[in-house]
Length: 259
Image (cartoon, rainbow, N blue to C red):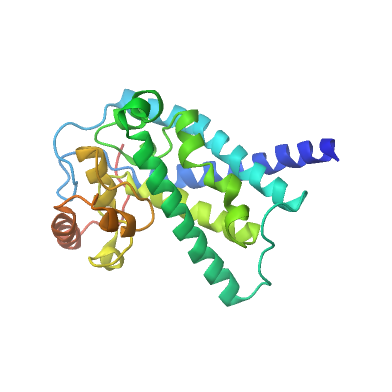
């Protein structure tokens, strides 16, 4: 039984890693915007150096392996050992509700863990690496240390203990998190009307401000916790509206940017 669980863990990790790596490189390539002179670039000035871009990609390849392992541990515990809440019977409503609950749960997990590792005793050893890329680019999303992932990404190990969700729905949540995270680091506002305040959805501007101003905008899916706890940057709504207006004025036919 243990040997079977080990083989299942290794196989599941390989599949999840392939899925997340494919999403990382496909989304990263589409949304890589490193030209600081673009009219719609949020941060103007010096672009991220090619050396740091390569550093972020190398670290992300390692980081996504640990994320895949944590997701797979949770899956094997649920699937083989039946640890956690059984998923609701499959229906449109159960899928939609469990996905929403998972997004809310992960957003709360990420917000509080993110705030925790910004505290001085933890920041330098755990989270500083991720903030070394400034301005961030799409390749920066998964440039994290193993300890960083243990705080922020360990939700995927425990999700089945928190909510009744089918593994496929949880994987969809992780894919959404992966793709939206890469876009969120691109430095160009792509949110459109879906993020126009007072929408609770996270925008690129939201996370870009986090990298600029540091002690603000900690959430990952929604702005709810930041608004409730007073950690939303005071210029967020005004800057987001301006960035969205500016983006609408651009006539570029696609989101691809030359490296």
